[in-house]
Amino acid sequence: SMMVAFALGALTDLWADFMRAAGAAERVFELIDRKPAIPSEGGERLASVQGRVEFQQVRFAYPTRPDVPVLQGIDLKLDAGEVVAIVGPSGAGKSTIAGLLARMYDPQGGSVVLDGRPLGALDPEWLRQQIGTVAQEPMLFATSISDNIRYGRMDATDAEVEAAARAANAHEFISRFPEGYHTLVGERGVQLSGGQKQRIAIARAVLKNPRLLVLDEATSALDAESEHLVQEALDRLMKGRSTIIIAHRLSTVIGADRVLVLEGGKVVQSGNHAALMGQDGLYRRLVERQFVAA
Ligand code: ATP
Image 1 (cartoon, rainbow, N blue to C red):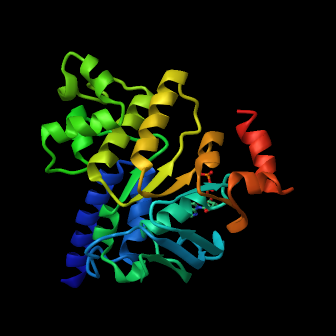
Image 2 (image 1 turned 30 degrees about the vertical axis):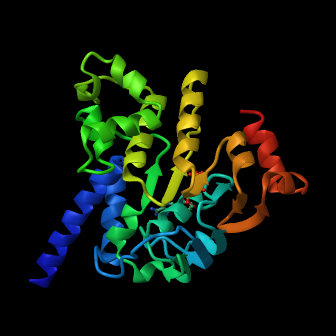
Image 3 (image 1 turned 180 degrees about the vertical axis):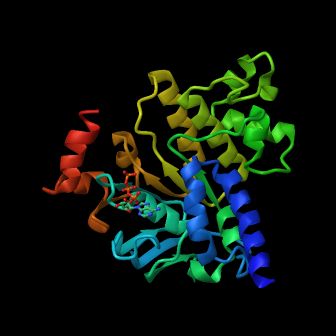
């Protein structure tokens, strides 16, 4: 029946998404909640992506809590290759913006546009192939390091996997394991540090080679050495790609083309770091207490 076909399609898609996101268990439930709303395929696939992103008066509430407005008329513009940092207090809606770009949900008002095409007109599967993500605490599959990186592009050769690992500053630590790229990670393998996991996730994104990046910067402190290697790898990854970064570090907001200050689902300030520091507003307070104090 249609119902069964739909459910199977949704499940297959869910599994693919789950594997891709490799998120925590609760993410599965989020995915189950949202899947029926977004068709898994169909729609345009652009021949090439420049990476211009625009949010136009985007309004959004989660389907499970339709009465709670989460984004209340968001405008955001990202030219090809630009870096926009989003800052704001917990619950302001930063991750929700990132989720809407990957079309995890559709907005209730306004639109999200890629290269002049509303996301609703694009094939969601294709769209997600154009976006690389690096999560705060990337979860790895219980398999080899090499397979974990190859997840970015399944048909990549060993040489390409290694090149991606080098670009991500991961080759050196991987090579120090006796089994090298065949080293198993997870419960039955080696335990990697937070910084090492991030560099694996960066290698995955390098291999994927997307035009768009969504980065969720780690809040937890890494040791200085790892911090430097992660930062260097991220800078390399971001070069020439349109990037939305949920920022927690001063160096990131200083380096961004534009900073969006979000509060209660609204953009309360936007501009570059210097301009925002010149205003008596939330940004300066966030910088003083969150970044400098950290
Ligand atoms: P943080 O810095 O803590 O990660 P954030 O700025 O990224 O916060 P969001 O995660 O986008 O904020 O959340 C915005 C609002 O939406 C919050 O009130 C949150 O409780 C709510 N929210 C987030 N995810 C869901 C969901 N799946 N279902 C219902 N409400 C949600």
